[in-house]
Image 1 (tube, rainbow, N blue to C red):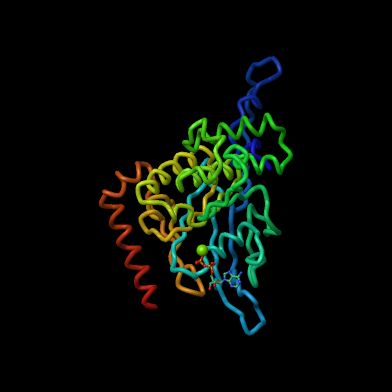
Image 2: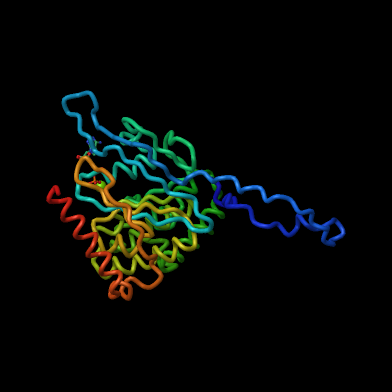
Length: 303
Ligand SMILES: Nc1ncnc2c1ncn2[C@@H]1O[C@H](COP(=O)(O)OP(=O)(O)O)[C@@H](O)[C@H]1O
Ligand SMILES: [Mg+2]
């Protein structure tokens, strides 16, 4: 995992490079500026189709001919939200990016992450699911540090990082000794988020992570996620059934047709620069929600 490695963004002027060993600036020789090398796309789908049980009588096409590109923007991981009817292939898309079978590999087309075809799961990608996937017999701290343990991190490093993330997701210090059954749904999702972010993935895949939460808790979690996402600068793919949630959290909203899912709209939306409750009251926000609601209901009617 390259958690501490700087991201290879466009070359920044390096002050030290212009200094002589004595510390005096050398005369810069004017040279033609070399174009910055193109960065690989964070995620790219090229005409991806997934048919489960292909070639059998039970064949089921989940997604069809999906293409999109998520670019590597300097100092800004994009937040992509994915909307679409049940069964249209949202989870299939996330798990293809994660490299998890049986979704991986695609039936046809290419799934690329950071310019390379996905060959399987990797430390550059982390996943948060809707259902609470903590280990029941492990404490909060041991759940949060599970991935670090798998990577062979020592106990001190694990626990220092684990406690930092427990705090960052808004859990209390004494929650670290609790077991999952002692936590509310919102707290469990905080654990799930901490467990993923402690590993500092470049890409965070979230499959309806707040789907089981009550509306109030859900809004708190949305605000928390926005704060954390700004800090970690990861690219997020976030699947949801809630149009409001998609429009609030997203830089871009992807809308899929009913099964087999095709990408029917990619809409740029204003970033979440205010708390969820405030932004929801704004006219622009409500107009975007109304536009997408209309699009989704036309798709549901098969228009
Ligand atoms: N492992 C699988 N084997 C066979 N069919 C599957 C499998 N996973 C999903 N499907 C089917 O693929 C379609 C898309 O599923 P999914 O990606 O889970 O949709 P969504 O997340 O949008 O609800 C559905 O018809 C579903 O039944
Ligand atoms: Mg799903």
